[in-house]
Length: 116
Image (cartoon, rainbow, N blue to C red; front, side, top):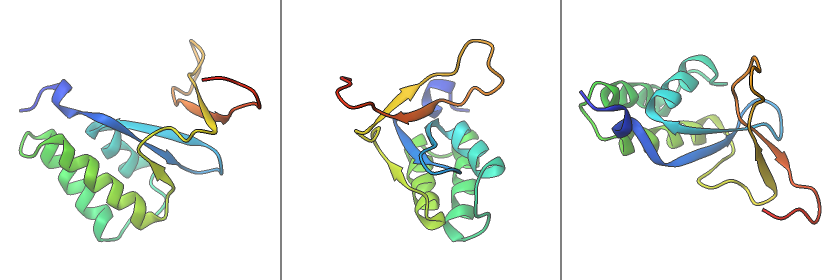
């Protein structure tokens, strides 16, 4: 069985999901599997099914976590989702407020003249 730290990815996958401009970052195999099960816009397709299988294999300790990240990216491309390996330059990360119902991180356009 792999440890929790081995299931975390070294690089997150930034993706636009749902509404235009609403980004989410996926950092782990567990997050990817949950996204595929519960929030995926196009359930079906070869890459989608493969990503589910590979995530399960990683979580069971049979494959390295980089395999899940790669499969997740292929599934996102198959579904036509915008993805990036780094935060798009024109966006800034906004963390949820303490006690908020949603724990999703959100990305908003940077204001002109704003430094990172």
